[in-house]
Amino acid sequence: MKVLLLSTHDILGGAARATYRLHQGLKDIGVSSQMLVQEKYSDDKTVFAPKIRLSQGIAKAKLTFDALPLKFYRQRSKTTFSLQWLPDKVIPTVTQINPDVINLHWISAGFMQIETIAKLKRPLVWTLHDMWAFTGGCHYSGECDRHTKSCGYCPLLKSNNNWDLSHWVWQRKAKAWRDLNLTIVTPSNWLAKCANSSSLFQNFPVEVIPNGIDPQKYKPINRYLARELLNLPQDKQLILFGSLLVTSEERKGFHFLQPTLQNLSKSSWKDKLEVVIFGTSEPEIPPDFGLKANYFGTLNDDLSLALLYSAADVFVLPSTQDNLPNTVMEAIACGTPCVAFNIGGISDLIEHLKNGYLAQPYNVEDLAQGIVWVLENPGRYQKLSHRAREKVEQEFTIEIQANRYSSIFRELKAFSL
Image (cartoon, rainbow, N blue to C red; front, side, top):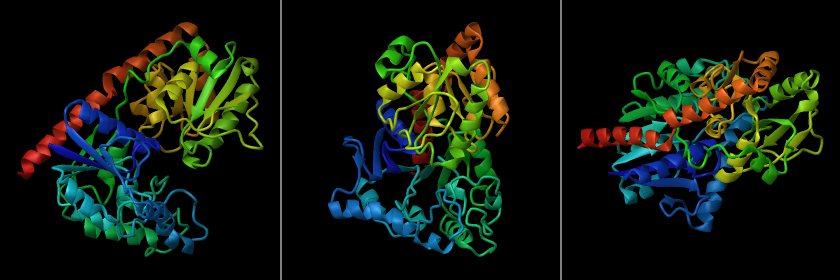
């Protein structure tokens, strides 16, 4: 059985990293897996991307051109909004590879035109890494539920028109995908509920298969050694926060982190704590957390990330909307308890008061209290850390994930014969 995974990138970004891990996991269990991407960052020979410089340049320019119609909405929110209207050259490459099953992943940034998906002529499994597949263009809808109808009046576009760009995108999807042989996979239970309630996907089968991680790459490392290697203090308790685009992606909740840490800085914890941030370098005018901040910039390799998670006492992610964040999974794999708002798919990873703390959404006082609760009792902390690691070993390994996908792929192939 030959499987082809389609993804805009292979290892850059959270969704791409999760997709590439699955690709490796499938190969490890004997599935013939290949990837087709718009931009390749690994040296993996089973990952295919445009090789000609002109093609590579066009691929990078497509993101800019894809967003051109958004210029008509000058008051729009600056969050990612994908139209996917430009033609692509995916079909000839797919025909040449000739897979039995195609597994779509994150395919925005101008990689694939909406209408191309119906032309793939293979059984399709679509792994959703956000909400884009069933919305009129947004990747996370916030409080909006227009995707349960036909979009329009888009709050992200600041539109008061039903026949706006979001409705146009929704209509294109509804027309193109009406007769797809499609199985939806979501990494979290939350995203499965969103897909099931959407007007576009309510009649398609939806399976929940969590993303996986390699527990041999992400595992607890001696904290003293990790801090020694990273030049972090041994006499402080460290609060870790980070992700790709950590400060520029509003839904990651950086604006909630600052008041949370300032809360702690006004308590008896002030001299016991420091904050560690990855995903961004220290800005020229750094925010005032009330605590000393250590910045690590962008980290992409597994070892550096595992060291950072192991060096920390607690990982905090105050996202306002999230699917199944890699950062939380990576942290608990390293035995680091996590504190986050109880939103999206985060409760699939964090068991409240067992391997971390789920705070009331957007309540910075409760988020600060969660950090204190995790840190204040050494005996309890050891139990939280042990359960964090155990949770990953039981539910979130790449092997578990790859075997579940393999079962779906084989069933679809057999059914299509």
